[in-house]
Image (cartoon, rainbow, N blue to C red; front, top):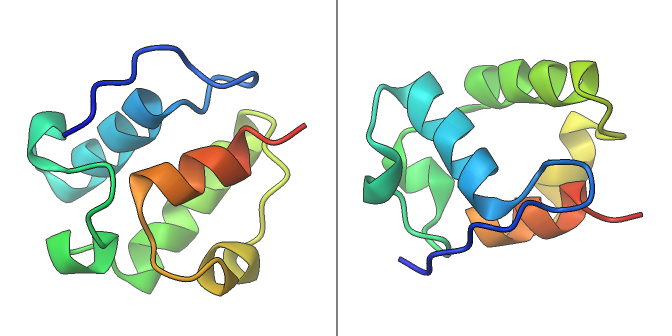
Length: 85
């Protein structure tokens, strides 16, 4: 796993994203790799919709379909998307 502690401009850095996903899945954050396909660790569409709502509440401009269209779902990909200006 690549250790990235600096959060993105809106607080959506890789460590934050990983921790939120791990919490939702009942996993340890350190067990989720930056470039691991999140579907492989159990993230399904219902859980993703829940994450989208959490992230919107924190100010992210995010849509479920946007995350699905980014290609392979990974901490790295989603962190970059959520941290965009």
